[in-house]
Image 1 (cartoon, rainbow, N blue to C red):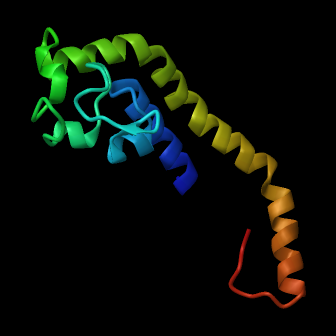
Image 2 (image 1 turned 45 degrees about the vertical axis):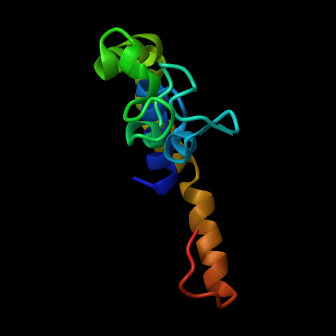
Length: 122
């Protein structure tokens, strides 16, 4: 599995379960603003889960009915179809893309070898 494929799959999972994308979940910046605990009960970020923000550990999702598990359940109900499609389509697209690009990659690698570039492969 390539790095790009892994990042896309991880992004799909974070969007499905927590609402922000992969970058936002680690930085705590949602829509360009750092507001852990004050960005809505359905948006969970790592700083918020670790206690940053006005609500302490968990921010404002603690007041949401069902707490953390309620928020995760609600997010998965709202984003589950998109998450499932992403988890199926992304690996298929990489597999098909790899098959379609096999010949051009082989030709590019042969050309690189002919011109004396070693240790580099496309």
